[in-house]
Image 1 (cartoon, rainbow, N blue to C red):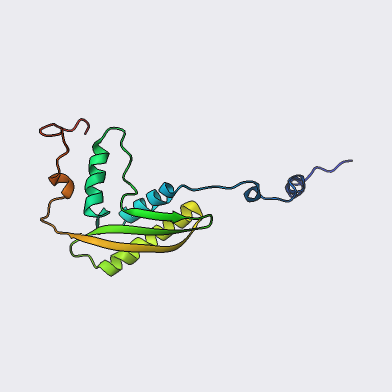
Image 2 (image 1 turned 120 degrees about the horizontal axis):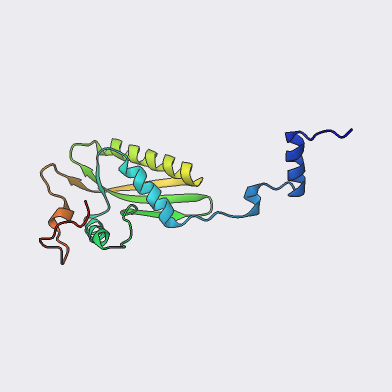
Length: 160
């Protein structure tokens, strides 16, 4: 009487049919630079004490681009990544809130970015370089509020 195969027998048979190769041996996964930049941007924004990402010019330019219908998302604004097959390196520019301890904030941002990028992509993060470009004061208006987009004067927002 023939025996019913066990799960281990079925796994062994599948491995033999595939030549003992794993799924990782059967193709590559390529990650776009923008993927890593968006993940890093979201991870940085999770840290309390960050006012904005990017330099003053890039924030102003991105804010105007965000208002254009169909404009590209600015989640990765202020972030540059280099992505290899197994590793990535990330540079990020920050504007911090007045009163935060910058070395402590930088360490927390770095840890959060490394954890998120490594968990979500499987890439090893070899470095996260942080440039603090400005400190946002409590009574200081946002640059975006000061800038007026051409053609937007006196108009109410279309969506709420």
